[in-house]
Length: 125
Image 1 (cartoon, rainbow, N blue to C red):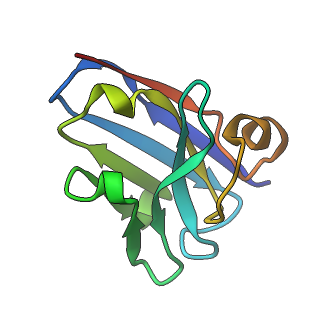
Image 2 (cartoon, rainbow, N blue to C red; image 1 turned 90 degrees about the horizontal axis):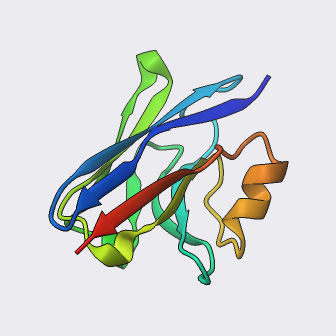
């Protein structure tokens, strides 16, 4: 059974760091591309970073130099390390076995087992 379970997130001050975790089951890292998405209130869903099936990474422009993906295949877990957080990074973050542009993360998270449940990241000025 495919499952994508997220952990981490929370509230921090600007400039601080957070790490999000995404543990998968029912498939392996590398079987499909894996991405972190985020969606802020009133905004569309956007890709933050992608781990390709070749274990390379692609980062959104806003993530470059601040966010980084890593993986632990033994634990079937992908991580998103977020440093130098800004208030504009405030959003619900989703892990997904996906890499396509999507308009509404929340709907996909609610309907697809290949999407995690979402976790709120709040960054205060």
